[in-house]
Image 1: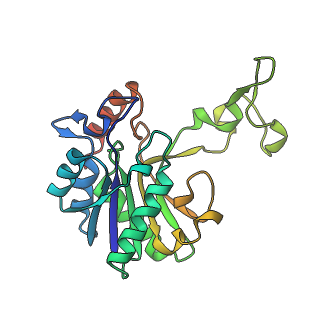
Image 2: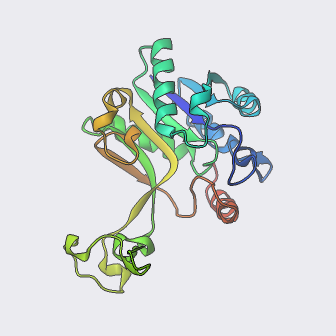
Length: 239
């Protein structure tokens, strides 16, 4: 059985009510909900939130409310803790659930096709703990990343000694660089039982992670400039 949970809380500081932003006539949290319904593979849908407004929208699409406790709704609260809370809630409600689909209210960049392909990939490869959506951003390869030293000067974020490939300004000389775009994670529920040993920093993804590549430009919205990028992504990628 497959359960899905969409996560979002009240009180965004970066963009006011970002989970309820309207793009092309829909709130952004509706896009993943529509994709989940359209995929036809989800047995149970849930929403983890402290927001009555978010809960009301999610219920329109058949989602059951997981009331998020106050200590998981603070500015410093971690998504991992909310995911583990939701996992326990679902497991107690239905012990037959094997797969958990994780979506974010502020990440509309997922299609029904991505959900189906991710599930098929995970189901057909028992070695994988999860399959996530990613986008390729070779311009942000670690060879190009910089950080500040004690003199407020830019130095390589990762020492070049760690790289086995030649370093040059030609981005084609780097390995392809992928980032989780937060549109989708589908994880085996058993991979969340011993989460402490999972791969950092997104420990809800397990240890062995497969991927489905999506167009760049998507992502979870945290800054105003991302809104226009998401509009473009949604126009290019129908739910």
